[in-house]
Length: 344
Image 1 (cartoon, rainbow, N blue to C red):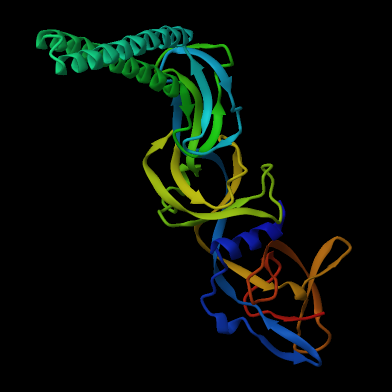
Image 2 (cartoon, rainbow, N blue to C red; image 1 turned 45 degrees about the horizontal axis):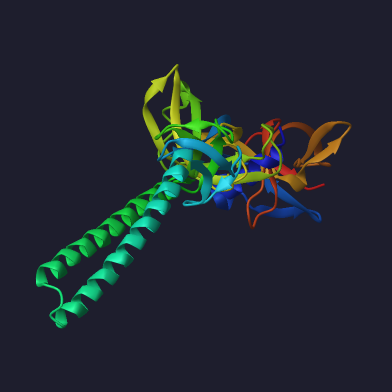
């Protein structure tokens, strides 16, 4: 597990090395021309690596409003869609037949309405000449009104069918990524059935932590997400913070949700390496420039009151990289507080 990742993660996410006495960790006067470092035990954030699952905040279905057969389907699993985008068209063949019948009926009613209008205008002209009685004019006026209302009714019914055709367009209910498309072109659908399931809105990081870490986790704690592939590397995919700690343990684990940046390329359900804070502990940290590797071992030069510095083998932990400071390394064994290190 690359130690450089831990330090970079700490610098990005805020899980930084914390010193109880920063002034004591300064370079002192040198031995000859070489600087000397005074070793001190400081407080450091204990970082734990856990695995989390990328989940969606909301899962929504794009549903059919009218029954019919899928005539076109423009989405596939994994595709990103925008709210209101037409992702499928459902067609009911009976609607097309009804439209044809209504078009013929409208044409016939339009002809009848035109004939009634002509007869009424002729009768009104003859009435002015006292050739026809008023009763005939009233009768023709009633026929014209009936034809006009019949034509309006047929056109309104056609508008209803046109609206049903538009309702056959299945639109994405929200921005998101398509998770499942359980249908194909030609599938018969009923009203209310799902065309596709979307992972809407932003992603959330679901943490499942051992019960022993429950007392350390709280809302607002920073996290950092490692590079994809379930392995530690120098890359940091995103940073964020814990937004919710569930009050109930599940199978001996505490569940927490976190929001983080840099998750746009993750799949829903994909696992990710996450670093979290698990309290503080004491540690010895020295500048990386004081460490020398020889023969596969790590050495530091320990200053002595008399004589040349003594080479001491040390066991190293993670590398700490903080903005504005030289790289530092945690020393697990080989040194104690008060030792004087000489830079080699």
